[in-house]
Length: 93
Image 1 (cartoon, rainbow, N blue to C red):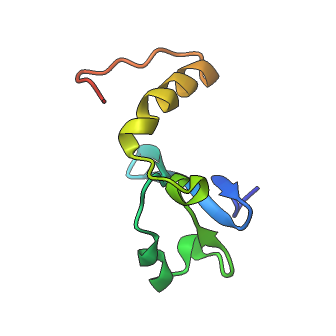
Image 2: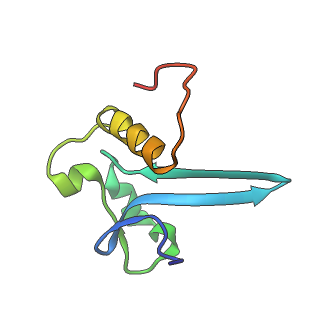
């Protein structure tokens, strides 16, 4: 539940999700940390949540996980969960 939206590994956020409404436009998105330089988060309070951290797939799995490695399984899961077909004008991989 809010304010703890997203995907969490213990007290660290792995994936942020968000929705913005303004000027009669609604936009939404997500940020999945794959191999992010997490040191930048040492300078802010991520998501405004004191005492919470940020993590990445690479940190959690102890090996480098590039974005290219997660795109296909992510898109496959997205299509399955939302019962839809994604159509790309260009190959995302």
